[in-house]
Amino acid sequence: MSRRKCVGVGGGNDNLLNATFALLVIFIVVVFTLDIGSSQEAPTHNQCPLRCLCFRTTVRCMFLHLEKVPDVPDDTTVL
Image (cartoon, rainbow, N blue to C red):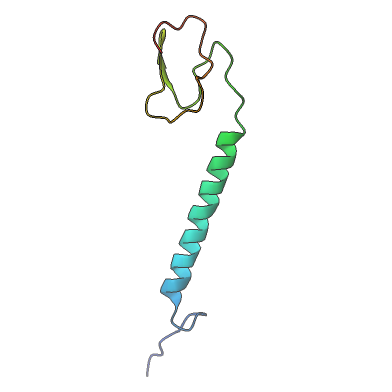
């Protein structure tokens, strides 16, 4: 009895199809991540600004290339 080799829908282009699908999934994840990040509300004066690190009365927003000084909690002593 002989065995037949099955060829996928792409006629042997399964690797290209898999790579295209993987890129599409990555693109969708990136778009949703950016959308979620932009829909977050601005912090109140009692919250740590987005993308910054806060500990007690210190707010660190280093190397973020910010366009303006963020709103910080009222009890901030180090920015």
